[in-house]
Length: 94
Image (cartoon, rainbow, N blue to C red; front, side):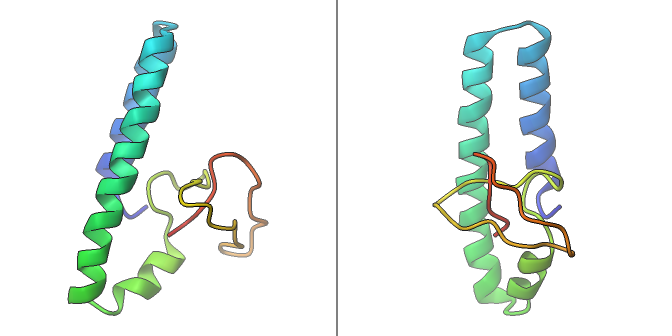
């Protein structure tokens, strides 16, 4: 997982929302997920410029949540570590 703190914050906000059965909280969790996805994409562009080998690392390691594909930007799901790619609403490992 390339961004464990961001992923942890997303999971914590979702867990808190589900614990309290809060629809606004779940919507907030989606906003948090989108925010950290865009923030990490910006940071990774900078990392790819500074460290060209980062692109290979990013292809091998999931971005925010290691066991869930992330759907952002319409990217196609892909095979990671021999596993079949998911086809859920949540899919890309950039």
